[in-house]
Length: 372
Ligand SMILES: *[C@@H]1O[C@H](CO)[C@@H](O)[C@H](O)[C@H]1NC(C)=O
Ligand SMILES: *[C@@H]1O[C@H](CO)[C@@H](O)[C@H](O)[C@H]1NC(C)=O
Ligand SMILES: *[C@@H]1O[C@H](CO)[C@@H](O)[C@H](O)[C@H]1NC(C)=O
Image 1 (cartoon, protein in one colour):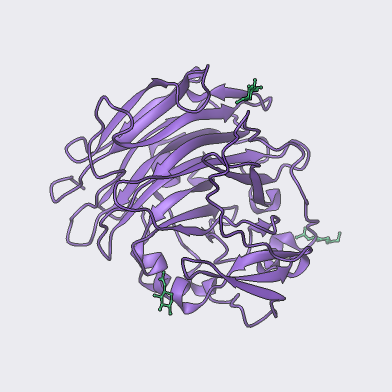
Image 2: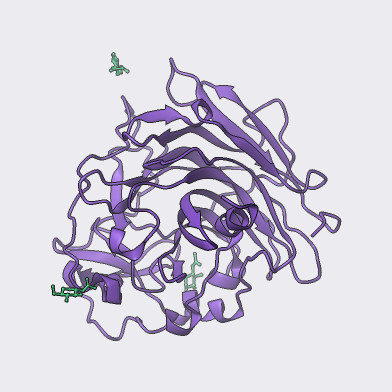
C-alpha cells in the first residue's frame, strides 16, 4: 500500500457527509421511548427495522444480522460488577437506541475541520500492521479528560482498513475529545467508517451502521475526573458467516461483552475478504493557529505503564479468524512528532493474569512546535 493511502486511512476522519448528516433527525420516526443518560445524552428507542442506519441505498435488500456468529470478547473470569454501563439504556425488545441527532450533537459538524493529509497539524502516535488480511482488531484502551481547545481534537482509536489505487475503506472506533463534533470537551466513545463511495461518517450521523444491541450504543459520553481513566475494550471484527463488520464493547470488569451492532459488508468494496491493515494509536488535530492538543494523559510515556494512556492486550484476528498478539505480525511504529508525543511498546500483564499482553503507551503535551 502506498504511503499516501496509509496516511489517508489513518488520518482521514473525513466526515464527508455533512450535507446529509442532518437528514435523519428524530422527527422522521416516532421513538417508542427515549432515554436521557446522566451525561444529558438522549437516545431514542427506534424499531430495529426502521432505524435510520438502514436507509443507506446499498442496504436496500439488507437482512439484519441479529447477533454475530461468534462473539469475539469472551473474558475469562471477571467477577466484579463495577459496571460502566450503569445507566443501561434498556430499550424495549424489538427497538434499538439511537443517539438523538439533535442540534446539540450534530450542528457542530458544520464547523468541523476534517483531519486530512491536506490539512496540516495532524499527528499520530501508534502502531500498525499491514500484513493482512486481518479479520479484526481488539484492545483494551483508556481515555482521560484533557484540556482540548475548541478547534482541536484528540483521539484514541483502533482501526481496520484496506486501500487500493487511492481508494480506501476503513472502520475505526475508540475515544475522542472533539468539541467541533460534540460541542463539548468530554470523552466520547465513537465509531467512524468510510465505504465504497468514499463516504462515511461518525456514529449514526449518516445511514450505514446497524444498531443491534437494545442496551448499549457505540456513542457514549464519559466524564472522567482529571487523571482518572475510563476503560473500554473494543473489538472490530468481520463476521465469519456474513462478512459484516461487528463492533463489540466491554468495559473494565464488566460482563458480558456487548455486541453493539455492525457495518454491513454491502458498504465496502475492499473489505470483503478481510482488511489489509490493522492498527491502534492516538491521533490529534492541531488548531488552525498551529497549536497541537495534548494526547493520552498529556504526558510522555514513562517506564511506569500506568502513568500514561495505553492500549493493551492488543490482538488481531488473522485470516483464519485466529486471535494473535499484534506483535506476532510484522508491525510498524508510527510517530511523526517526537518533540510533542511519545510512544512506548512492550509486553505487560495487565488483564490476563498469566499472560503477557502486547501494549502501547502513548501521549504527550502537544504545543506550538509539533511541526506540520
Ligand atoms: C443537563 O441539562 C440540564 C438542563 O439542560 C442542566 O441543568 C444540567 O446541568 C445538565 N447536566 C449535565 C451533567 O450536563
Ligand atoms: C436489491 O434486490 C433487487 C432485486 O434482486 C436488485 O435488483 C437490486 O440491485 C438490489 N439492490 C441492492 C442495493 O443490492
Ligand atoms: C475464576 O475465578 C475463581 C475465583 O476468583 C477461581 O476459583 C477459578 O479457578 C477461576 N476460573 C478460571 C477459569 O480462571
